[in-house]
Length: 69
Image 1 (cartoon, helix red, strand yellow):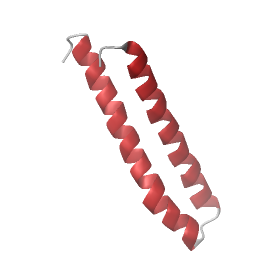
Image 2 (image 1 turned 180 degrees about the vertical axis):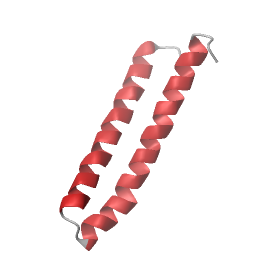
Image 3 (image 1 turned 90 degrees about the vertical axis):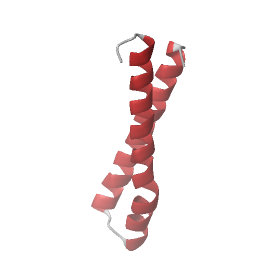
Image 4 (image 1 turned 180 degrees about the horizontal axis):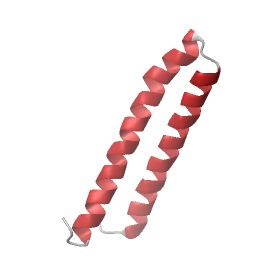
């Protein structure tokens, strides 16, 4: 994972997943029907976890490449 373009792509994917999570949270907040809330719980919650894992992985890989960790 020494390619900076790959880090940028991973960070972009993490940002997009976080944006999708936020949009789903906004929809669940504005229109709280049981179906929307269920979709939020089963789809949006794992999205933010995946986004955080990708973000931490990209940051740690970047720091390792620069010998900071």
